[in-house]
Amino acid sequence: MEQPGGGAATNDDDAGRSTRDIAIEFARAHGLLTLALVAVGVTLVGVFSTWTSGDAGSLNGVQGPQNGWFAIVYALLGAGVAHALARRSWPGILATLVAALVILITVVGNRGIPEFSNGWGYWLTFIGGSLLAIAGVTALVWRLREREDPLFRSSIRSPRPWLAGFGIFLSVVVFVALFQVFFLVEDQSWPPPPDAITAEGAQAATEDFVAGNPRPHDVGLDYAWTTAATITPWAEGVNFFPRIVADIERATSSVHILMYGWNKTEVGQEMADLVKSKVAEGVEVRILVDSYGSGPTARHKELFSGMEAAGAEIVVNDVLPLDRDSSLPDRYLDWRQDEVGRTDHRKLYVIDGVVAWTGGAGIESHFLNGKFHDVMVRVTGDVVRQAQAVFLTSFRSHDADLPDDLSPYFPQQPEAGSIRTALLQVVPGGFVSATQSAREMIDDAERRLDIMSPYFTDTDMIQRTINAAERGVKVRVVVSEKSNNDLATDVLRHHYNDLLDAGVEVWELPGTVVHAKLIVADDWVHFGTLNLDAWALYRNFEIAMVAQSPEAAALFEKRVFGPDIARSKPGVPPSGFTDKLSGWFWDKMAYFL
Image 1 (tube, rainbow, N blue to C red):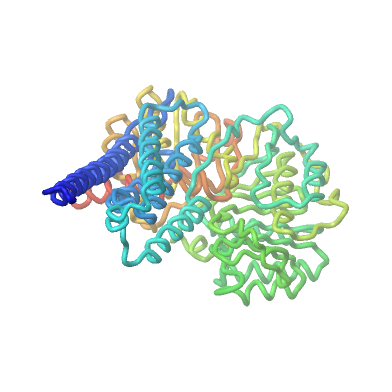
Image 2: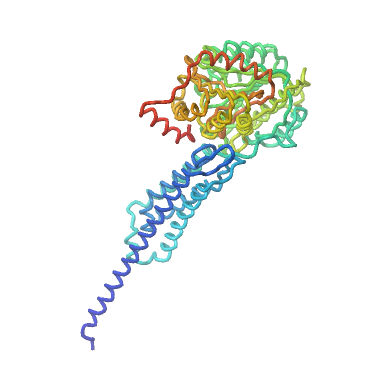
């Protein structure tokens, strides 16, 4: 016999369990949501706190060679999917795990400045990423354990799971792309180690390099201190272009040109015609150009096709997909796409293995007509052998052929010289001897420090410059009154008050774009292609030289800094609210500028 009221009791029990299950489900969802949002908050606080610190100062996660922007972007992704995570949907779980993984990779893989140590903000960011990972793993475990619960299934139903899945896939692809293009890496690259390549060993080192199957990122080789016979700066294209042309006209064996910007303007066509005439004379001509800066297969294809048809060997650094290797015109698709996103910003001429030119100017008319103010430096002496090694290793790294016998390219120098000199580079992937030597010069300056740069946006370099002034060094910074990059100008002007308060003289040169990249500290000179922004300091291919020479320092003062400052006006900090806000915002975005 059925017990009176039995059915009612059973229904009450079911109702009780149902209410309890709903309460548990709500508590779990609320707990996951809270944990995810707390993790995001901890991560963001950590990024904008002290990530690294050293004698030169402290940097947060978006200053100097820090990669905190990756943590910011993927922390915001974690916040965006927090409600989906709380429902324990597959898209929410997977997106959260991807976000946490990227944050942790960013923190663990962030090497920063070698002499700096990790600050509390760095560890706080790591904790935030770890908490987000815990939230994702917890949701995953609950999902797997309770997937048969009808109440659970009804709470996680998603009308468009394919769309969420595509979003996760896209976030992974974006991370891989951003990692190759934007990620900053810095290894200990300066000073040169005991086994660095000497001028005498440059040929043998080049032979070893070209015998293998090198890639562009392999050209980050250590070059030992050596000597230069002459270091002669020439300001303005009307002064340096005719001299470069004259050196090439005198070439009897080889002309090697590594160039970021070469276009079909008056000066570009003149150089191309000169190349064709030298090839006709039997001179070997090899050229390495950047696809973004020169457009050799697109907008200026005719210019480069003419040189290639005449017999010049030309290879291209492909910044944008698709990356192709070997010499024009018979290039093949490189499945690794390892050049993509990595600009070759170098400018280098090596002529007959005995003369080198480097500096900031491309083979473009705005350097000739005065619209861009730049400096090219003519160098002779033993360091030219190392410059030749830089060119040949770079040329070969794009899978271009070289002769078996390289000795003609490394002749005995007419004069080895006595000026203590070192050849420097930045190579994507962490080799940054040019960056670290520039830091060293700024930090070691005792009497004077002169800086000329078109894009001075790196917080670390700015702080070191301020530190130099505060310890009594006479510091002068020369920049454009009107630059070709307004955002970079806004960033530097954001720091004008701090620079001026420290005693730095900021000079704005009117009527032209200051494009030279120079540092003079006491009796040391640093010249080449190195801008003081994140791209040049850490991401691009760059080349520079540093030399200890009172005579060279005096010549840079006489020909460059003295005349430029004489016609400049003092920099004035921004005063309007809009200008201040713009400067503040773009300073925070300097990682991308």
